[in-house]
Image 1 (cartoon, rainbow, N blue to C red):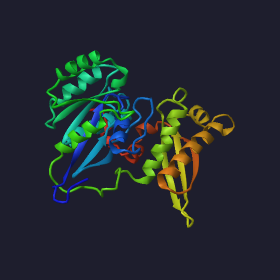
Image 2: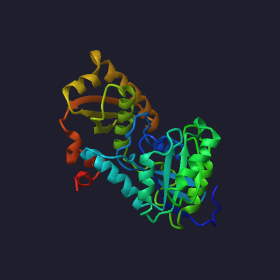
Image 3: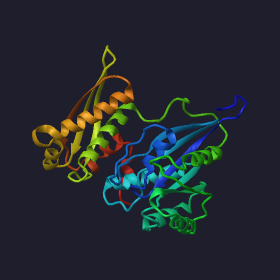
Image 4: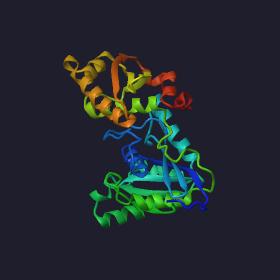
Length: 306
Protein backbone atom coordinates (compact mmCIF):
# COMPACT_ATOMS: atom_id res chain seq x y z
CA UNK A 1 0.00 0.00 0.00
CA UNK A 2 1.18 3.53 -0.74
CA UNK A 3 1.99 5.84 2.15
CA UNK A 4 0.09 9.10 1.88
CA UNK A 5 3.26 11.19 1.96
CA UNK A 6 5.10 9.03 -0.59
CA UNK A 7 5.68 10.93 -3.86
CA UNK A 8 4.04 9.41 -6.91
CA UNK A 9 5.94 8.04 -9.89
CA UNK A 10 4.74 7.43 -13.41
CA UNK A 11 6.41 6.35 -16.61
CA UNK A 12 6.47 4.03 -19.61
CA UNK A 13 8.00 0.57 -19.88
CA UNK A 14 8.19 -0.93 -23.37
CA UNK A 15 8.16 -4.72 -23.68
CA UNK A 16 9.93 -5.76 -26.87
CA UNK A 17 11.25 -8.97 -28.34
CA UNK A 18 11.00 -11.43 -31.18
CA UNK A 19 7.56 -12.83 -32.08
CA UNK A 20 6.11 -15.31 -29.58
CA UNK A 21 8.61 -14.52 -26.81
CA UNK A 22 5.71 -14.22 -24.36
CA UNK A 23 5.31 -10.44 -24.23
CA UNK A 24 1.52 -10.42 -23.95
CA UNK A 25 1.62 -13.13 -21.28
CA UNK A 26 4.11 -11.01 -19.33
CA UNK A 27 1.87 -7.95 -19.65
CA UNK A 28 -1.07 -9.86 -18.20
CA UNK A 29 1.09 -11.23 -15.36
CA UNK A 30 2.39 -7.77 -14.42
CA UNK A 31 -1.09 -6.22 -14.51
CA UNK A 32 -2.67 -9.12 -12.65
CA UNK A 33 -5.55 -9.49 -15.11
CA UNK A 34 -6.01 -10.22 -18.80
CA UNK A 35 -5.58 -7.12 -20.95
CA UNK A 36 -3.64 -8.56 -23.91
CA UNK A 37 -4.62 -11.48 -26.12
CA UNK A 38 -2.38 -14.52 -25.95
CA UNK A 39 -1.97 -17.33 -28.47
CA UNK A 40 0.82 -19.71 -29.37
CA UNK A 41 0.89 -18.16 -32.85
CA UNK A 42 3.59 -15.60 -33.63
CA UNK A 43 2.75 -11.97 -34.47
CA UNK A 44 -0.55 -12.08 -32.55
CA UNK A 45 -0.03 -8.54 -31.26
CA UNK A 46 -0.33 -6.06 -34.13
CA UNK A 47 -0.47 -2.59 -32.60
CA UNK A 48 0.90 -1.05 -29.44
CA UNK A 49 -1.35 -1.38 -26.43
CA UNK A 50 -0.92 0.35 -23.08
CA UNK A 51 -1.59 -1.56 -19.88
CA UNK A 52 -1.46 0.02 -16.44
CA UNK A 53 0.28 -1.49 -13.41
CA UNK A 54 -0.14 0.06 -9.95
CA UNK A 55 2.72 -0.76 -7.58
CA UNK A 56 2.97 1.26 -4.40
CA UNK A 57 3.32 4.92 -5.33
CA UNK A 58 4.31 4.05 -8.90
CA UNK A 59 2.12 3.76 -11.97
CA UNK A 60 3.87 1.72 -14.65
CA UNK A 61 2.42 2.13 -18.12
CA UNK A 62 3.37 -1.00 -20.03
CA UNK A 63 3.57 -0.79 -23.79
CA UNK A 64 2.89 -4.18 -25.37
CA UNK A 65 4.51 -4.06 -28.80
CA UNK A 66 4.26 -6.34 -31.84
CA UNK A 67 7.12 -8.81 -32.17
CA UNK A 68 10.10 -7.42 -34.04
CA UNK A 69 10.94 -9.42 -37.16
CA UNK A 70 11.94 -8.90 -40.79
CA UNK A 71 8.76 -7.42 -42.35
CA UNK A 72 7.56 -8.03 -45.90
CA UNK A 73 4.00 -6.74 -46.23
CA UNK A 74 2.75 -3.22 -45.54
CA UNK A 75 0.97 -4.47 -42.42
CA UNK A 76 4.15 -6.09 -41.13
CA UNK A 77 6.26 -2.99 -41.77
CA UNK A 78 3.74 -0.85 -39.88
CA UNK A 79 3.79 -3.36 -37.00
CA UNK A 80 7.58 -3.28 -36.67
CA UNK A 81 7.64 0.53 -36.91
CA UNK A 82 5.03 0.66 -34.13
CA UNK A 83 7.21 -1.55 -31.95
CA UNK A 84 10.28 0.67 -32.31
CA UNK A 85 8.20 3.79 -31.66
CA UNK A 86 7.25 2.22 -28.35
CA UNK A 87 10.95 1.95 -27.52
CA UNK A 88 11.65 5.57 -28.38
CA UNK A 89 8.89 6.78 -26.03
CA UNK A 90 9.86 4.57 -23.07
CA UNK A 91 11.51 5.34 -19.73
CA UNK A 92 12.70 1.74 -19.56
CA UNK A 93 12.87 -1.02 -22.18
CA UNK A 94 12.56 -4.71 -21.36
CA UNK A 95 13.98 -7.05 -23.99
CA UNK A 96 12.12 -10.31 -23.60
CA UNK A 97 13.92 -13.47 -24.65
CA UNK A 98 12.44 -16.94 -24.98
CA UNK A 99 14.96 -18.91 -22.93
CA UNK A 100 13.99 -22.18 -24.60
CA UNK A 101 14.61 -20.71 -28.06
CA UNK A 102 17.85 -19.03 -26.99
CA UNK A 103 19.75 -16.10 -28.47
CA UNK A 104 18.92 -16.10 -32.16
CA UNK A 105 19.40 -13.58 -34.96
CA UNK A 106 16.22 -11.70 -34.00
CA UNK A 107 17.50 -11.12 -30.46
CA UNK A 108 20.92 -10.05 -31.73
CA UNK A 109 19.30 -7.60 -34.16
CA UNK A 110 17.08 -6.06 -31.47
CA UNK A 111 19.95 -5.75 -29.00
CA UNK A 112 22.03 -4.05 -31.69
CA UNK A 113 19.35 -1.47 -32.41
CA UNK A 114 18.85 -0.87 -28.68
CA UNK A 115 22.38 0.51 -28.52
CA UNK A 116 21.07 3.56 -30.39
CA UNK A 117 18.34 4.14 -27.80
CA UNK A 118 18.97 6.30 -24.74
CA UNK A 119 16.37 4.51 -22.62
CA UNK A 120 17.65 2.21 -19.85
CA UNK A 121 17.26 -1.42 -20.90
CA UNK A 122 16.89 -4.71 -19.05
CA UNK A 123 16.70 -8.35 -20.13
CA UNK A 124 13.82 -10.63 -19.22
CA UNK A 125 14.56 -14.30 -19.83
CA UNK A 126 11.15 -15.99 -20.08
CA UNK A 127 10.08 -19.64 -19.87
CA UNK A 128 12.95 -20.39 -17.48
CA UNK A 129 11.02 -23.39 -16.14
CA UNK A 130 11.79 -25.17 -19.40
CA UNK A 131 15.58 -24.66 -19.30
CA UNK A 132 18.33 -25.99 -17.03
CA UNK A 133 19.97 -23.50 -14.65
CA UNK A 134 23.42 -23.81 -16.25
CA UNK A 135 21.94 -23.03 -19.65
CA UNK A 136 20.16 -19.98 -18.20
CA UNK A 137 23.44 -18.63 -16.84
CA UNK A 138 25.06 -19.12 -20.25
CA UNK A 139 22.13 -17.37 -21.97
CA UNK A 140 22.36 -14.46 -19.53
CA UNK A 141 26.06 -14.02 -20.25
CA UNK A 142 25.49 -14.26 -24.00
CA UNK A 143 22.71 -11.68 -24.19
CA UNK A 144 24.50 -9.26 -21.84
CA UNK A 145 27.51 -9.37 -24.13
CA UNK A 146 25.32 -7.85 -26.86
CA UNK A 147 24.40 -4.67 -24.95
CA UNK A 148 25.04 -2.89 -21.65
CA UNK A 149 21.80 -3.96 -19.94
CA UNK A 150 21.08 -2.61 -16.47
CA UNK A 151 19.73 -5.88 -15.07
CA UNK A 152 18.64 -9.39 -16.01
CA UNK A 153 15.47 -11.06 -14.75
CA UNK A 154 14.55 -14.73 -15.05
CA UNK A 155 10.79 -15.32 -15.09
CA UNK A 156 8.04 -17.66 -16.07
CA UNK A 157 5.31 -15.28 -17.22
CA UNK A 158 2.82 -18.13 -17.44
CA UNK A 159 2.94 -19.09 -13.75
CA UNK A 160 4.17 -15.79 -12.29
CA UNK A 161 7.61 -16.86 -11.09
CA UNK A 162 9.98 -13.86 -10.88
CA UNK A 163 7.26 -11.34 -11.76
CA UNK A 164 7.30 -9.54 -8.40
CA UNK A 165 11.03 -8.74 -8.60
CA UNK A 166 10.58 -7.43 -12.14
CA UNK A 167 7.61 -5.30 -11.06
CA UNK A 168 9.66 -3.88 -8.15
CA UNK A 169 12.48 -2.89 -10.49
CA UNK A 170 10.20 -1.25 -13.03
CA UNK A 171 8.41 0.73 -10.31
CA UNK A 172 11.72 1.98 -8.91
CA UNK A 173 12.86 3.25 -12.33
CA UNK A 174 9.71 5.27 -13.04
CA UNK A 175 10.35 9.05 -12.92
CA UNK A 176 8.66 11.19 -10.31
CA UNK A 177 5.34 12.61 -11.50
CA UNK A 178 1.57 12.42 -11.34
CA UNK A 179 -0.25 9.31 -12.51
CA UNK A 180 -1.60 9.43 -16.06
CA UNK A 181 -4.57 7.12 -15.41
CA UNK A 182 -7.02 6.36 -12.57
CA UNK A 183 -5.62 3.76 -10.17
CA UNK A 184 -8.37 1.24 -11.05
CA UNK A 185 -7.83 1.34 -14.84
CA UNK A 186 -6.04 -1.70 -16.27
CA UNK A 187 -5.61 -0.71 -19.91
CA UNK A 188 -5.80 2.24 -22.28
CA UNK A 189 -7.87 0.47 -24.92
CA UNK A 190 -11.44 1.34 -25.98
CA UNK A 191 -13.89 -1.43 -25.10
CA UNK A 192 -14.87 -1.79 -28.76
CA UNK A 193 -11.25 -2.50 -29.70
CA UNK A 194 -10.71 -4.80 -26.75
CA UNK A 195 -13.82 -6.75 -27.70
CA UNK A 196 -12.50 -7.16 -31.25
CA UNK A 197 -9.19 -8.41 -29.85
CA UNK A 198 -10.96 -11.02 -27.74
CA UNK A 199 -12.72 -12.41 -30.80
CA UNK A 200 -9.49 -12.32 -32.82
CA UNK A 201 -7.82 -14.37 -30.09
CA UNK A 202 -10.54 -17.02 -30.29
CA UNK A 203 -10.24 -17.00 -34.08
CA UNK A 204 -6.48 -17.61 -33.88
CA UNK A 205 -6.81 -20.34 -31.27
CA UNK A 206 -9.53 -22.17 -33.19
CA UNK A 207 -7.98 -21.93 -36.66
CA UNK A 208 -4.23 -21.68 -36.05
CA UNK A 209 -3.47 -24.44 -38.57
CA UNK A 210 -6.03 -23.63 -41.26
CA UNK A 211 -6.12 -19.83 -41.39
CA UNK A 212 -3.15 -17.64 -42.33
CA UNK A 213 -2.60 -14.15 -40.97
CA UNK A 214 -4.97 -12.65 -43.51
CA UNK A 215 -7.75 -11.99 -41.00
CA UNK A 216 -8.80 -9.18 -38.69
CA UNK A 217 -11.83 -8.35 -36.54
CA UNK A 218 -13.68 -5.05 -36.23
CA UNK A 219 -16.48 -4.11 -33.83
CA UNK A 220 -19.11 -2.38 -35.95
CA UNK A 221 -21.87 -1.73 -33.39
CA UNK A 222 -22.02 -1.60 -29.59
CA UNK A 223 -25.49 -1.09 -28.15
CA UNK A 224 -26.19 -1.03 -24.41
CA UNK A 225 -29.71 -2.24 -23.56
CA UNK A 226 -31.98 -1.02 -20.75
CA UNK A 227 -31.59 -4.34 -18.92
CA UNK A 228 -27.80 -3.84 -18.78
CA UNK A 229 -26.99 -6.31 -21.53
CA UNK A 230 -24.88 -5.33 -24.52
CA UNK A 231 -25.50 -6.14 -28.19
CA UNK A 232 -22.25 -6.31 -30.16
CA UNK A 233 -21.88 -6.83 -33.89
CA UNK A 234 -18.44 -7.70 -35.25
CA UNK A 235 -17.07 -8.41 -38.69
CA UNK A 236 -14.26 -10.86 -39.36
CA UNK A 237 -12.45 -9.76 -42.52
CA UNK A 238 -10.51 -12.25 -44.64
CA UNK A 239 -8.88 -11.83 -48.03
CA UNK A 240 -10.37 -14.72 -50.03
CA UNK A 241 -13.65 -16.62 -50.25
CA UNK A 242 -11.87 -19.87 -49.38
CA UNK A 243 -10.77 -18.30 -46.08
CA UNK A 244 -14.35 -17.18 -45.41
CA UNK A 245 -15.51 -20.78 -45.77
CA UNK A 246 -12.83 -21.90 -43.28
CA UNK A 247 -14.02 -19.38 -40.69
CA UNK A 248 -17.66 -20.35 -41.18
CA UNK A 249 -16.96 -24.08 -41.02
CA UNK A 250 -19.31 -26.89 -41.96
CA UNK A 251 -22.90 -25.77 -41.36
CA UNK A 252 -21.55 -22.69 -39.60
CA UNK A 253 -20.18 -24.71 -36.65
CA UNK A 254 -16.76 -23.02 -36.55
CA UNK A 255 -18.05 -19.45 -36.41
CA UNK A 256 -20.63 -20.58 -33.83
CA UNK A 257 -17.90 -22.00 -31.58
CA UNK A 258 -15.75 -18.87 -31.92
CA UNK A 259 -18.75 -16.69 -31.08
CA UNK A 260 -19.66 -18.72 -27.99
CA UNK A 261 -16.13 -18.54 -26.56
CA UNK A 262 -15.81 -14.83 -27.27
CA UNK A 263 -19.25 -14.06 -25.85
CA UNK A 264 -18.51 -15.85 -22.56
CA UNK A 265 -15.22 -13.97 -22.07
CA UNK A 266 -16.76 -10.62 -23.01
CA UNK A 267 -19.64 -11.17 -20.58
CA UNK A 268 -17.15 -11.85 -17.77
CA UNK A 269 -15.06 -8.84 -18.77
CA UNK A 270 -17.96 -6.38 -18.98
CA UNK A 271 -19.96 -7.82 -16.09
CA UNK A 272 -23.17 -7.98 -18.12
CA UNK A 273 -24.83 -10.35 -20.57
CA UNK A 274 -23.40 -9.97 -24.08
CA UNK A 275 -25.35 -10.73 -27.26
CA UNK A 276 -22.61 -11.20 -29.87
CA UNK A 277 -23.27 -11.41 -33.60
CA UNK A 278 -20.40 -12.32 -35.92
CA UNK A 279 -20.25 -11.81 -39.68
CA UNK A 280 -17.52 -12.92 -42.06
CA UNK A 281 -16.73 -10.77 -45.08
CA UNK A 282 -14.13 -10.89 -47.84
CA UNK A 283 -12.05 -7.75 -48.28
CA UNK A 284 -9.25 -8.48 -50.71
CA UNK A 285 -5.83 -7.19 -49.72
CA UNK A 286 -7.15 -5.57 -46.52
CA UNK A 287 -3.68 -5.71 -44.93
CA UNK A 288 -2.53 -3.04 -47.40
CA UNK A 289 -5.61 -0.85 -46.81
CA UNK A 290 -4.65 2.40 -45.05
CA UNK A 291 -8.07 2.75 -43.43
CA UNK A 292 -7.92 -0.77 -41.97
CA UNK A 293 -4.42 -0.14 -40.56
CA UNK A 294 -5.55 3.09 -38.90
CA UNK A 295 -8.49 1.28 -37.29
CA UNK A 296 -5.97 -1.21 -35.86
CA UNK A 297 -4.00 1.62 -34.28
CA UNK A 298 -1.20 1.53 -36.84
CA UNK A 299 0.17 4.35 -38.95
CA UNK A 300 -0.22 3.30 -42.61
CA UNK A 301 2.68 5.55 -43.60
CA UNK A 302 4.96 3.37 -41.47
CA UNK A 303 4.20 0.53 -43.84
CA UNK A 304 5.42 2.40 -46.92
CA UNK A 305 8.71 1.20 -48.26
CA UNK A 306 11.48 3.65 -47.87
